[in-house]
Length: 382
Ligand SMILES: Cc1ncc(COP(=O)(O)O)c(C=O)c1O
Image (cartoon, rainbow, N blue to C red; front, side, top):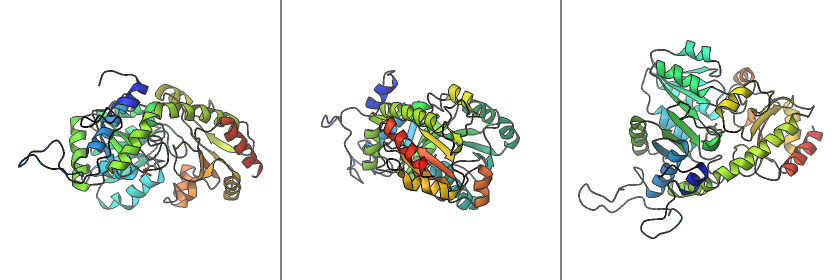
């Protein structure tokens, strides 16, 4: 594909007319198997676990959007992280950002803990802590930036330099930013991971995940894991993500504009504390956000003090829906301690700052004045 600009890539990368029929949209190839042309020969596909024409197009689009050399689509964001884990070996050491999505911690603490792979949680925003934690057996540093829901950042370029000097790879969960607002591979990371359930799909109508690689070895390994373990994304879900991607740059512009407006409004409100939005100058890592990101997005969190206050707020919002997940066109508000981070012990949540009063917002693309009015009336109920 020529060196197109981003909005053009979003509409056209992987999304060219079907060679057979000229269909402008990528057809949904609902076929588990494909007729072979002879013994050991085929037209490019033999069985949909190994490869499916609709999935191929989505993978082509995702690789182009992240500037990677390959992409592989999985059944959910968690299936993508699990596929990444499947490339590790016993006795490998993994450094993971300390306040990643609760589901990632559930996978590491309750499943991967039985595999003789050591996962060490480190505040990857603290480069000295990363330097100190890295060992000869460290294979991977898995970073989430900004983190869910505390919105703390990691300097991707600096962590990648530390990792590469010691022979380790860096994977970045880019779900909160989407490929539009942050390009981890261009900053030096090796692998990008997405929950396509969020901004990439954008309409809250399908789960999905992806791993985008920067090296031939990544492609080979993720291909093998797809084929061998089978946690692949279905053709129909691939189609939904492809459709979402066409409007991703437009949607991200609207998310960004609304996110900034909502954060500015919230910053004037006395009933909340610890408002975390990297676009505010009050955010401790605002400078890093300006340097590393192409925008600040529409995710933020704040503390209302108690679970009862958070409950009153979530009961009072009308436009914002009290639901987990994020990145859809509709605005959502959620209580992290009892939803996305319920898998953590209370002690761990306290340590990470995921308090009982913490509320996370995913600001959608509705009219920003309507959203602010909704938040204003809900805060009155607190
Ligand atoms: C940052 C992040 N990574 C990964 C996931 C997991 O994605 P999925 O729900 O598609 O499995 C989530 C889900 O909320 C998330 O917020």
